[in-house]
Image (cartoon, rainbow, N blue to C red):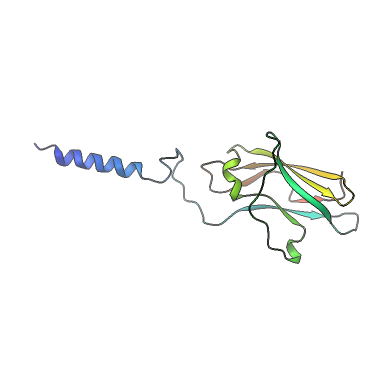
Length: 142
């Protein structure tokens, strides 16, 4: 009995298995969509004034470092008061169980509104997801 064909088939099977998506990274094979996910938050004002602010930043609570996002919403009147707290460009920096982040908005009077979020992601995740945090923030609250 010639074992060469059997050995060749076994080697070919092993090579094909090692080429499957996810196997090299230790991630299960998952079908992901091609869309780019963002987690928006709407800024409102309950005092009747315009919801304006000087600046904002997103901080990793545990690491104390600012999270830089690569995308913003297009500048339209509908998006003028919507901020992005996380997007898929940072998904690998968030843990699968969730990472605590903080949105810090500096109002025009210099006061800072701080709002906490928990965002999940990870090396095997297809997209970021909001686990905890509001969909809108009242700029007048402190």
